[in-house]
Structures are given as C-alpha cells and as structure tokens.
Image 1 (tube, rainbow, N blue to C red):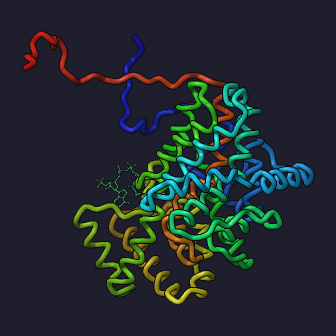
Image 2: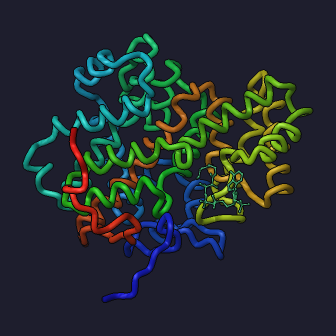
Image 3: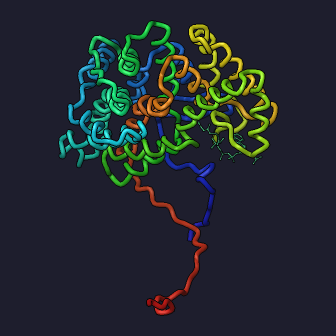
Length: 382
Ligand code: COA
C-alpha cells in the first residue's frame, strides 16, 4: 500500500500539473501563461489578458478584434433570466442569483455540446458565459433591488459596459481604467478553492456550466472571495465609530478577541505582500480625492494595514484594496464578490478546458477515525 499522507486543507499538496498560472512566492511573481500578472495589468486591459488566459497566447490584432466582438455580441441574455431574478425573494444574495443564472444558462446551450467535454466546447461555451457574466451580475442586483434592467450597450468595451450596467451611467476614463485593472488582477490565481472546485467537478467529465456553478458557491465564502465585501463593511464601520483616530484601537480590540481581519493573510503568500494588493493600492489616492469620505477612508486603510503588519506580521491580499476601490467607485458592496467571479470566469474556463484536455478523476481517500464493528441489531427501534 502506498504511503498514506494527510495534509489538512490539502496544504502544500500538488493537485495537478498546469500551464495556466503559478504563484512564484519566492520571486514575488504571479506567473500567468509565462507573463507576470502585474506587468500584464500595467500594460494591457482585461479583454486581451482574458484571451491570453483562455487561449494560452496573447492575441494578435485580428484575434483580439474577433474576441472583443464575440464578447459584445454574446452579451445579451434570454429575457427569461430576468424573469428568473424576479421570481427570487428580494433577500436573495446577488451571488446566489448569479449562481442560479449560470446554471440556468446551461439550458440554452446545445445538449450535445454540454455532453461532449472537449477543450474546444469549453472555450466556446466559456467565452459566451464570460460575455454574459457582467449582464447577469449587474441585473441580478438591479432586479433584486427593484431597479430597471440595463441591457448591455454593444458600443462599450467589457469593463465600461459592466460599470455602466451596475451604476446606470457611463463611467469616466479614470473609473473605467481602475475598474478594469481590478478585473485583470482578479483574472487568474493558480489553484484557489474555487478553481479546485471547478476542476474537481470537471474531472467527472461534467460540463463547464456545472463547474463554474460549483466554483461560484466556493467563491462566496468569506475565507475566499467574500473577503472583499467584508473589507468594505469593516472600513465603513471604523469610519462610523470615529474614523482614522479609532482605527488602530478597533483592530487591536478585534485581534484581542481572536477575530480575523478580512483582506489580510493568504494560504500561499502567508507573510508576504500579495503583488496585486501592492499594485492596486497605488490607484486608491486618485479615487479617494473624488469621494467625500475617500481621504478619511484611505487614512483608515493605511492605519489598519500598518497595525496588521506590526501586530501579526500579515500583509493585505487582493481583497483589501478592492473592497475600498469598489466602494469609492460607487459600486454597491453586495456586488464586490460577484464582480470577482465575473473577472475570474476567464481563469475558470481555462482550468476546465485544461482539466478536460488531460483528465484524471479527482478521488482522494480519507483517514477513518469513526467507530467500527457496530451492527444494526444493536439498535432498538420503538
Ligand atoms: N486576521 C488575523 N489573524 C490572521 C489572519 C487574519 N486575516 N489570517 C491569518 N491569521 C493568523 C491566524 O490567526 C494564525 O495565527 P496563529 O498561528 O497565531 O493562530 C496564523 O495567522 C495562520 O493562519 P491560518 O488560518 O492557519 O492560515 P490559513 O492559511 O488557513 O488562512 C486565510 C488563510 C486566507 C483563510 C486567512 O489568512 C484568513 O482568514 N484571512 C482573512 C480572509 C481573507 O482575507 N480571505 C481572502 C483570501 S485571498
């Protein structure tokens, strides 16, 4: 029998071989298809990086134009999706509405395509799903809040359209650029819980929609994507309790109660700075100036960061700056994690396609610590 190894939470376990991305913590680099994600985010917008993640190479002009066109044309969703949102209780979390809509959209695909899990089919369906993700996300929020649906505008690019559908107004260049940068930062990140969930599902030769639906449930958790919303709530809570003057005490009190501070720490980076958090932080002052509470919130942000580093040696992860950036952009907090999912869809599509290209069913074992030798005859039924 093979040597039995157990690593709680699969920490340090190599679960697959991939050509998509790698967190090279020693070199402070997030490798994506051979490029440094931070360099990609500095020089390119979300759409060409999404092409890179999904197709494995950066697009030439023709490929980029065709991909961009697909994302614009495929964005329109069947009207039944909006009816589905209307049927939901208003208390439904946007992420749950999003998860249900992704699953629902599978019904509109060719059943033969769904039954045939080839990388080509995954990429075709996945590109269509990526095109639709901003539409279902913004409009799930809108319908649940009794706001009118905003249909996608094919004259607008991916990020601009997304912000337009969220806020109902066409964003200015600063807002578009910084929002787009956050999407690129979120696009792909090796093997987080949601990507693993997607690959586990795909490994049964189940379809892309099922895999992304499962990944959505994973990403919702506060230890994963849900942290960005928690960050926004925390910063606003500190603002309400007295602002920058009370920020340090607020964190010390929470640490003394052994509470976790959302947006800090990371299973892989551990005590190193997440390069995405460092990049995005640089854009906060520009946005802070445009918001009435922006500068105070940024001061709180810095004090919390300093306190966490001093007290716990922990640095922010990507969710920390994003929580503040989205608030300063006027995005409802309930949309923070759903937006993360929209951005990550490109990465999930790439992983499902790669899983299907070299599939091996995930099926780990357990160390059993329950009882043995019980027999049903020992139980008395009255
Ligand atoms: N706030 C306070 N303490 C934290 C912390 C946080 N955000 N993250 C880690 N720690 C502490 C733990 O209490 C523990 O301290 P101890 O050894 O004194 O008990 C130590 O750091 C190790 O934490 P552990 O839970 O073993 O690490 P992990 O790898 O399981 O956790 C996270 C990784 C991401 C789940 C964890 O850092 C966390 O809960 N962060 C907040 C949620 C978040 O931002 N998630 C987004 C991730 S991208």
